[in-house]
Length: 148
Image 1 (tube, helix red, strand yellow):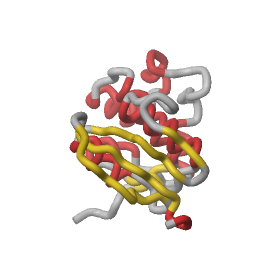
Image 2: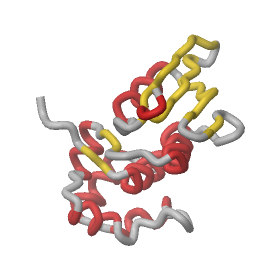
Image 3: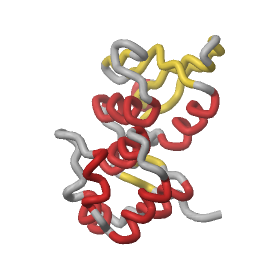
């Protein structure tokens, strides 16, 4: 079993942004292997550009290739960053598909396979405290570990 791959929240958001905007895994891997920032131009957003994507990953020992191939866990989620990551990873919208409060996320409905991904990716400072079956899959409540 290989060691768990850790990514910063910022890196994870950019990775999920590329996936969410339809960039195929093969293209993401090719761009990572070539360290080709311009490959992400089509999926770049005003607030989430890829200018420092590779230099940050290198500086912080983030193995981007392994994260794409084998999955990852976010090192630390802020309340706002978690909401943005959920939006990018699962195409859900804050205040419409879930609510972010002080140390809590409620009403998050995901398909079972998405809930599994969330459980693997969620930083250890957050926990899934409640899960109930709903027609769409599962409705989850997430809380800051310190508040559980």
